[in-house]
Image 1 (cartoon, helix red, strand yellow):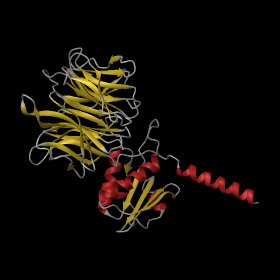
Image 2: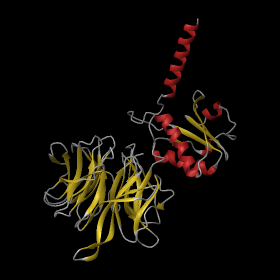
Image 3: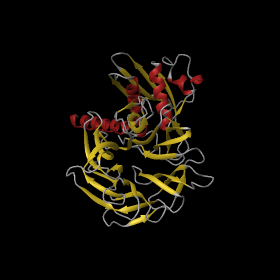
Image 4: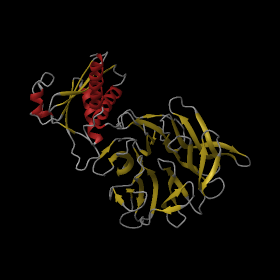
Length: 422
């Protein structure tokens, strides 16, 4: 009898685990249709941010407030079912706890119950709620707790590094240089940022001059390490997916070439040494390739290089200038900025996506200012880029299909964004 009870207990537990891991919203399914979610949160500030999160994710459709029951917190599931909602999010909060409940409206089953202490900020609390819902329904991590670092103009007119939430909220400076910063790149663990800064340095025979220094900065402590500095260019840095190497452009020995830097040994070695410009490298997720921009054939084009064989394959053959490529986290796409014709009708940079075999290329922006410096989110369903479509340079988020975009900064000039992968 005990044996039967143990088997039954194991069977029930196994079913519960399977149910808890069930994916309700299959984003990659053919003909995917956004499910309708009713968001019912007592705190209006939390509700506003959570709704914004779910809309930006481009996975959910929100139930119109006009269709809510008269007393939403006390309404029965049958009252919710006639509204057209497929899922119901109920959140109550006070100074000591946040209670999150998620229901499948069709059968009234509770898909999620979570209680946690509220964070100091409303934004962190709201993003935590959104992350819980997204992960429960899709089985994947969302973008809501990730960060973006970009170069922005500060109140004194200097261009420093600023960090913000993925949606542009809580924008704050993380450097305070009285000079110019360039090309930030966030490490895979989101603990450090590599970037270039113009710094004053004493050079024998030349006195104090402004030079480019490539640095690694701990985002939390502000401690910095200089990777390379001196005369010549040192910019366009990127991290390998394991966080053990940097690739960047360095011209201290002549032509701007791409170099590799080992984080542990602190040794630097040449990686791409074509005649002309070799700039803006990006590692493939598996670490076997890099994609970069090179002028070795004339105008800057994109090339893919096998890191083992050093074989280079040209990917682009059109447009006047192709730049700032970045490999998607799943390895299936490369996003970049391209300029058709600086002397003709279409004289702006636009965003393009190409597959690594160069068999397909899609244009995502057109005739709407300069659109540059794209960077993928960690879940690979969105990318951020800068655009001058509203005169100043602002940051926008777009989904990988190019069907939806969201402006996330305004009133401050920002460019060269990099999106943390976690």
